[in-house]
Image (tube, rainbow over the protein chains, first blue to last red):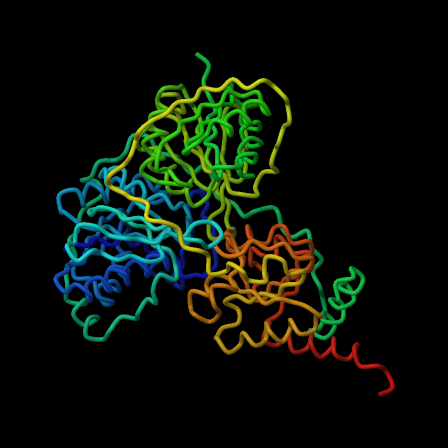
Length: 258
Length: 334
């Protein structure tokens, strides 16, 4: 069985966000740190769990991004992916999900993956489009917000639980090959192991230049980035923690809430 | 030929969902900048009544398709049916809710229909002839103005609307319904519905609680959830809740999860402690009457919905708050 896990490198959560002069992207400094999109970590873990269960499973990790995003692939190898594919795109500015999805689909097309896994969205741009788009381009069934999966013993179908609004779950049986976007909490992502990290250091990636792939025709553009204007309408309490506690209790009493 | 602003109707088979009326409000705002007409599309197992309701209330055309085995939502059937219905009509814009199902079919539709897709839209801005669709990034810390050039019926723009971004517009005209209703058999063999499992929050006390104290990643470790429980004790009857990440970490059970994928709450008082405020959490608390936020990060998006903002570390602040509360409850002179 062959699995493909799609990952994205994003800025470490909590990093300072600085919009660049063009207002199309962000400015990174030498202190900016990057990590694997946390939603994708669940996808990597799920792939490894499948491999541990079935044994004869090969996991490729793929990313689209500049050379620094190779660090995300190296980490994926350190966690347990077998091979890494880097679609190298050094162009600055916004890359819409349709471009990312088209490129991944083009690369995946002839590699016969039984299952393609993604996170449900990225921490940074939060589009949530890449997985469903890859599926549609490759004409494969797709489901998102996956909270449980089980591949049948004959390897032909996968039964999934898909979280819906309110936390209930729809259960579907889907034919393989298919694309699944996994929800957080499906598993507990592990840390890289030392032996795998050492091995990952020596590994070479399958490097594909983005220029060699087809760019989709119709794509949305990012006009400008900004900070939201709507700041809180609420009262900001000032003073020492004690003073704030007293003020809060007074407010709650005045509203008959305490 | 007049072009359409197509609204994909969200419903549960019996009732039209609020998000549909939010889409209608959004469509009205979009219509100001275009010459297009609003038109509703429905997919389900038995849609005639719902289509009639929409048409008679709004006066807009309703195009409905009954497809067996659709259930509440079947991705493959939805994509096939919508692609078929939408291709028969001339649409510039296709609007869907940014719900779990909308997020599933909208990106796929944009590929089938050779269009483009912008998800999680919160507003429209117009500068001259150019329309910008505003959406959040970085968990609401950034805002992006998106644009799609060359929107036309041969290359429509598919938008998903963030729930809560628009006030639902629920007209109540009483027209005699004129709908286009059809039956299709797009039974899809690649994906088979097997049933539904209940939410872990089913039967929890959160949905009806008047006071809820919730904790998020700011508790830093599992044992610090006791601070949330401690704060709850200062109210006569308060329930404790949790954000999704700490449920994912196993620090709190999923039945305590507040948010769109947990319990939607509507207490008189909601106290969010160490919760940054992801979109799905904010969706779950927006009917709270009064919101107090305790968070050490002053840029946390949850402050945007707070009535009272307290920039403090919950681990230090909650014991002080509980102590002050107890001082008041102890009669003076004792």
